[in-house]
Amino acid sequence: MTVAIRTQRRMPRLRSSARVADYGLVFEPKFSLTPRMLRQLKAIEQTAGFLKAVELRPDWNAQVRNRTNVIEALASLQIEGNSLTLEEAFELAQRPPSRDLRDSEREFCNYLSTFDAIDGLRNARDVVISRGDVCNVHRILVDGVRGGRYGAGQFRREDVKVGDIDGAEVVVHHHPPSFLEVDSEIRDLLEWIEASKVHGDGMDDPWIHPVIQAGIAQHRLVWIHPFVDGNGRTARMLTTLLLYQRGYDFKYLFELSTYYNENREDYYSALRAADTTSDYTAWLTYFLGGFAYQMMRIQEAAREGLR
Image (cartoon, rainbow, N blue to C red; front, side, top):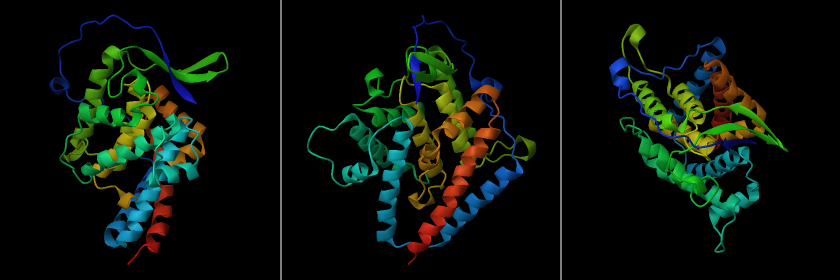
């Protein structure tokens, strides 16, 4: 399991007062659209078009949506070592017990609460995602559990390293930016997210396909590592939020974290590839591959719910 390793605090230092608007976007991700990625995007668009064209039974859609949220929430948590079983997750989703919840159970309930919190952004294309939105997603996810103990919804005030703990040995994979840089890094990411929604002209067109945008945003948030803990959960929920906002909710039938959880090492390796090369092509190939795989499953499921 990949974890954040806390390091010593540093004294604050002054930063330049120059803003991104003075020089254009600071964060400009590099990637190549390969033939494989174009085929993956085609499969995603075909499913999106299919779902817009069909009318699903409301009762069926509600039932499958609830099931999908449970599976997505559990898979996202299991990536980080949550021990809850699928049977326990479904029981919790139906009727949380009156007793005090274990951490694994509360994490799951928090995840479902976060789905409810972001639902209002469905198709809200003109809403600007803010620093506060990112912090609120984190706050709900870690309320009363690991991650929340170090400041729920608050950016870290210390430097960390990201790596694996193997017995007494620590293998460091990534050195996130200093905590002094977190605010500006998040600002740059959010400004890029807003800019990439806009259509321009010719070579200056900043528009990026919504699924590619969501994939890049997921990696970048994990790379910045703005919180001491809970960054992976927050980044995966940000991905869902951005997709909902731009109309790629796929009628709530997709659960991408299952794809990540089936082979966690592939997931972490793909993330690390972008860490080391600053090129998002390999990560996006992996990310879009998971989406394309989900699209086939979604179409099969949706045909069962046709009126």
